[in-house]
Length: 279
Image (cartoon, rainbow, N blue to C red; front, side, top):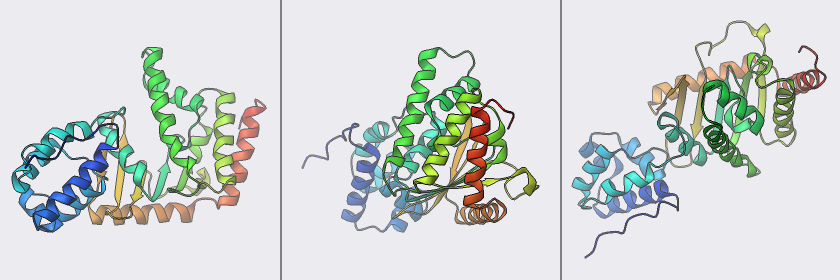
């Protein structure tokens, strides 16, 4: 009997790869935990591969082919599933973000990508790479704007963002760019598409002073937390880590301004930028 066909990279290859993995595992009569033991990962990780929230690495694909008797199907197709327009350290987080049911994010230094305007995204990327060719910046901005289309859906994912006041007062791209960026966030909040709270300078020390964090929940997979630094990032699925970061986010929301107060501050700063006043 011929083996399964190669996946079509144009049709959500990672989701298809996950579906094929679930089919092959069930055909072999293995639970997620049993398969995980045979390929030296957790059962939860197998579940994440099947749900499409984690990327299948070549070494995992090779072992899965051996255990499940799928010839080299997963080895061949994990390459297609790994193709991305985003940097390697960020690609898996973007893919997980696209299927999350709930996203909670703390942004200490800049407006998060899902809430950015094109002009703000261009200013951020130009700051990251001051000598990059304009066509490279264009490609990066297009990728950033593609992510924002997640918010075209009226309710999914549920998005809750805590913005540090520093992100609002750091003038990125000029006053006009900042005015547009803050108005955009304000409009999303008015449409009840995103819950926004501002962590003011007056809050003093807080639970996430060491950096940003993004928590993602899924329908049929364990939660993930994403940490990002300059040119680096990592996803964590360790239950203790995700629980600790969930508590950190809850502490931030308790310290931040209320959504109503936050919206008022956003609109005041946007108006100040628009009128060329120092915010």
